[in-house]
Image (cartoon, rainbow, N blue to C red):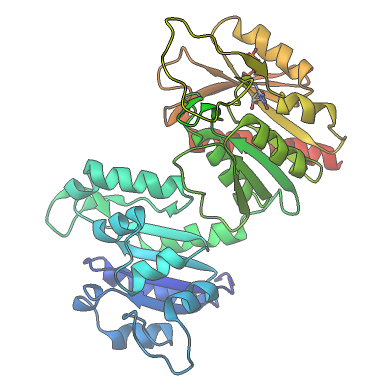
Length: 406
Ligand code: CTP
């Protein structure tokens, strides 16, 4: 028996031999009671005809940014507004490169850039192309932005080689998209406040005190919380990350600890979940000089004052329904310090990062953490990507939310 998805699906087709599978994909969505619109690149149409696509999708094919439609609309905006999800299958190295680098030079890439809906990509290419560092880096960028990757399979490729790069079968692509829509949203209706990244404390107009935090962990947490259905406010220090593409995330950019404090205080009261992943400066210069400080003396003393510990302050105001997760970064007596922070910051969870582990910590894309819970449990999460760690941490939050409900 087929499932009824009842969604508006845009299928983006790019030029690769795997386009023959896209036709089955259109059929699968139609059988699942979806409306399907197809956007194809010019190269895709070297492999299949518009007539085939239009017959299967029962909709007009969109292939040219300047194509005139019967009712006036700006096509790339209208399509992305209409879509419940966009699926690029096959996704060539070219479209992946364009998406990762913000190039919008045809109908599909322009639509993808305008799109704020869930996007799925199913890469299809030769194994050497798939393994190329440029392609891998582009995929990493897209995944970090919240785009859903449907990994290619390993097998016989059109170029007669064996390897990874075969577009996943249409049935698996359909299942991926369907399970996204049918997945439970345990945090639906909850609001989450997440802090991320470093803070920069100005010394003078050209210098600041900062730290190495990349913001990766906080952004991954915001993404996973949003995917679990929460409405997320992401308060971010200065980072070079783009906001995960999920309509449930509102980002507020701040620079200093004082600004981060102000923003967090503003959103904390309505938050059911508070995750403080930012590496907030503990001290800030007493005064930020208006003019650049000149090197006139051999010694220079900078006078610092303590910043507000945001986590501690929010912990003091914690209500019964709130769940608070804090982080700790220690270089010695890690367990003792992490446990002390649970108490002193009134948190439900403290996630301990160890700087001593290879592949873990501030800058790495991977992490290895130990979670300490209010009840005294200690949970080790082995080395994996920050996105995967974020997923595990959000599972812990979900479990606790269910406890809070009963
Ligand atoms: N934190 C915060 N505001 C601050 C300092 C820290 O919200 N001004 C939060 C961080 O986001 C993190 C946790 O507190 O979740 C732990 O930060 P950490 O720097 O490890 O610990 P501190 O409490 O600052 O203590 P210390 O530096 O002495 O270890």
